[in-house]
Image 1 (cartoon, rainbow, N blue to C red):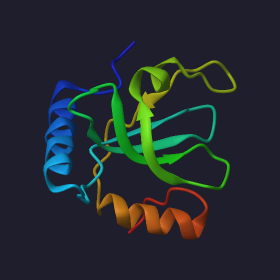
Image 2: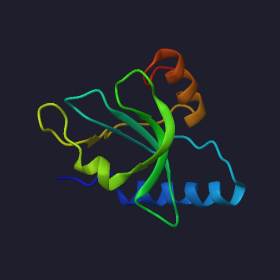
Image 3: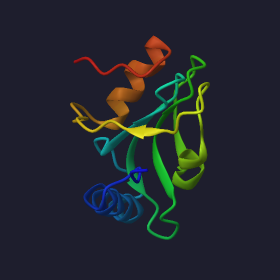
Image 4: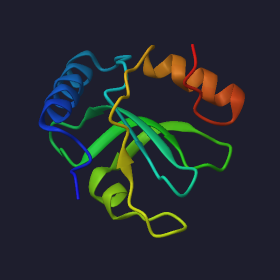
Length: 117
C-alpha cells in the first residue's frame, strides 16, 4: 500500500505548519487530496503540525453535507475503510487551483468540496 503522503508533500506541509505557527494564521493552498474511493469522504490538506507531525490541517468533507476546516490524524485516515473495504487514496494528479479558504467558502455554499474554478 502506498503512503498517503509523499516525502515532498510531507516536507511542504511541515513548512506550511511552521509558517502558520510563526504567523499565527495562514491561508495555504492544499498540498494533497485524499479520498475514499467507495465512500463520499475527501480531505484537502495543507499543513502538518511541526510538534505533532501526524496531525494535519485542512478542509475535511465526510460526505454528510457539512465540510469544515479542521485538524485530522493522518494515521486515523490511513486506517479508514469505505463501504467496500477500500482504503483511503491520494489523488495522484491533484493540483490546487486556489487557497484552502477559497475551497472552504465554496464547499460551505455547495455542501461538499468543489474543485472546479
